[in-house]
Length: 231
Image (cartoon, rainbow, N blue to C red; front, side, top):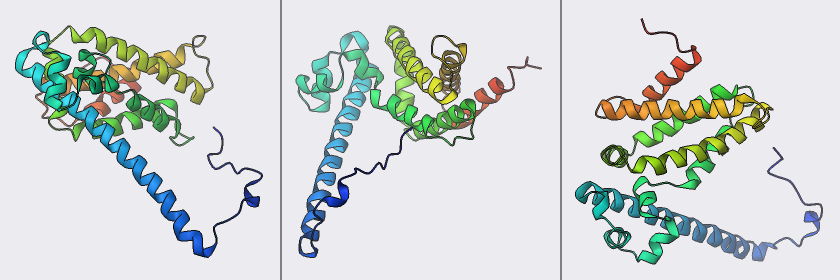
């Protein structure tokens, strides 16, 4: 990975802000960052609102009785706005967000270099589970809706497949292996996905009483121990 703080050769020749202009330069730059930050937070809030609306409506009426127009109306946006965030109704119900996968891959690649790929993935998975567990209403509702509507599993499986492919690329980069030619990247990416799904299924089956990060740890404990036979 390259240095994120690469300096351009001609930078020292740029005209600096004079003391009298410093405040103006800083104010303009800060304003741009604040505006960008507000815009991103507003987009995230709209995405979450659409996802929550979709989940609530499907929980109330059933998947086949909910339309994109219904979801948009519940979220108080236009159907056109809906399609800026989700390509279809099922995606809104599942809350699929490609940015989450990007963040997970970045977190994995930024883990300390002395960690093995397994250790790095486990740490990222636990952090992800800890964040998911804070959504005390959203995640339980999401899992209940998915359980009640098996037709959603096809779209979910496609999402898992894409996530594992992207993660395998990152594993190959970190481990120095070759994607496709070597078994390690795809196998570890698949194992990581199964560990998280197993923890989620156990969380759901136990009525969300257990702690999700602990369930993730239990799954990884078994995997790293070589899946010993139960006593």
